[in-house]
Length: 585
Image 1 (cartoon, one colour):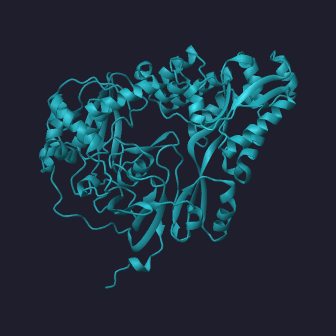
Image 2 (tube, rainbow, N blue to C red; image 1 turned 180 degrees about the vertical axis):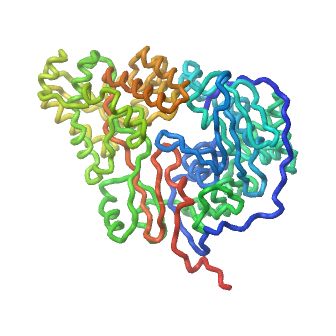
Image 3 (spheres, rainbow, N blue to C red; image 1 turned 45 degrees about the vertical axis):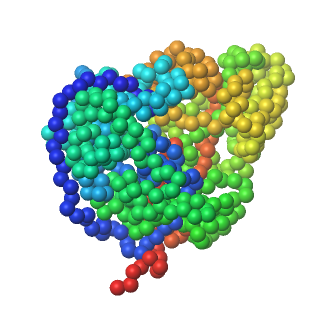
């Protein structure tokens, strides 16, 4: 995450925690005998989603980790049952992370030690994390973007009850609500790092190491953080590596010829607001033809929409299966670089105006065209509150979003001669990209442009190699100021279009340090406006994901990406009783 370190030693105290004498009963919401089988892609490799944030690990964490809230479509949605995050001071900018009464599944309370451990990772003081941050810095020009990330100013203070920490920042940060988390049990890290089996002693050892800036102890903690929660090739992690603070916990991990399977059961110690209802959920390999397995081997699965699976999915709908469309957080875009015939902004704007977005989506998506949500923003997700502000204020419609009455005259007015050639890079293996390219080529010809084929078999490598002038590609919607700067900043060597803009850089810096949500939306719109004025990108549509749920499983509501999309709402699922799961009296 690349958060910078500025740590000053302080003396604080941790009040001893009291372990639960026995595990509480399962929530009354759980219906005995209910069972759901979920097809997943990829395997879980670690129960520390911060050290190893793979898609599968993040999905598991969505079911087994509670938190202060979650980012949903770019907006923070708090979870008061876990605790509260509040700004407690302005000079210096100070935030209090206050826990309610969450608990780990072994009965150990989630407390300030867990928060302090999460802070240490975020602040970059764990040696193993420093190595990761260095790699990220090399990949994303973090040196030029460091001021865009939250910068901690000293070790946090623990309150007298040990259930909250107070964090001071060097400057206000828009990421204050998510800067500190309690995703990893400190007492398990303490056991792994120092061999301490007593939960209270293990927590205290972690706290002392952080407070004292003990390099040797922090190195052990860093190793435990980075490697201690890995499952290994045998898929037999010990029970203490599987602790949960969320509505479900891991009950079993098995492997057969098809791959890894993970069994989830309700977490009896969970004290959150959304209690589990399904008694058992199995995460199994989706398989090569997941759609055909829905209603048989699988109850729930997510798939990419294709021409081949359109008819089978329609048949599932006819059998009362639930079919819902979300997106993965990436936007299909036409990107232009200031070079060649497109050096001038007027030429780029004329080219973007002729792009027939409707035809491009129709020819690219085929029968799934309606699943591709149209968008006019490179920075905000359709449906979010920020999107409405950005769409209204960016100037998109007037500048590049409205086709000219005569594309040929528009081209001539921009000073571009008839027959000007633009070679467009796209992914030959993607039916959507290939269809969209064909539609763009045909429309360009009508406007007196010549679009030629620069398709590539390895689109990522071709984009990274550079040398292209126009490209049809999927671009992640940025989730932070640093990611905006990575894509659109003047100093970023990995910027999408390599178009420098000093005003944009200034706005991104202001955005990073804005804590008022309404002001931040206005700034995001201003940043988008600089992209629109530069005429370097034409957003087309969000890349869809289709969630299928058999009629026996209800309440499945997938989220938009990026991040975990399927399991964040698992506590709202309900399922029919499986007779084989019911124990006879």
